[in-house]
Image (cartoon, rainbow, N blue to C red):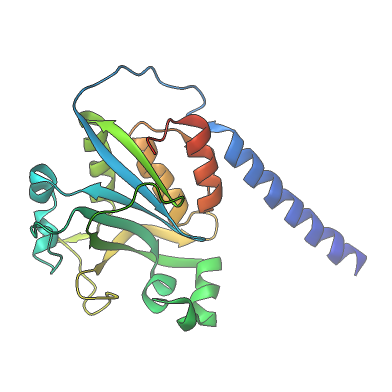
Length: 226
């Protein structure tokens, strides 16, 4: 029993140390040189206790770039839609847990082990950027294109079209899609968000498995425009 307890304690201590290092050691290690640009695109990072999404502004440029989503039932062309909300996550947990009241053991088990991944896409109207769970960043045109490229490359495509998962959305305007990559507790939704933000030239922590650690890293190493 002592050996079991010692092993469990060592695992917990290793995880805590990894989280601390992953939060406070930046990635990339050295800040890139930045020049002021007048032409920027604003993005948002939306957080809840376990998950993060990226919000992209819907304008003439992005409505064209993401018109492929309109064919799946997401009204990106609707002038009332101000933001496109995109996230990546584990298939079982994402699809089977629309609310906490519907939490079941098997999706949790798969989230803690290994699962297939999906993309979730929704739209939103105006968003209150002053909310504490929201961080805003202004990107250059090139940085925004890099972010968009990362996001679009995460979708699985079949015969040139994104692979929609029929009937899997939570509401009338959102959809789920097959995604590249496997989901697990170490490489999950928040590490995907981190990778997308790094593609846009932002700095994150070395490893950010939780929204809270990602938020700390973003606040430490970037200037949030909140």
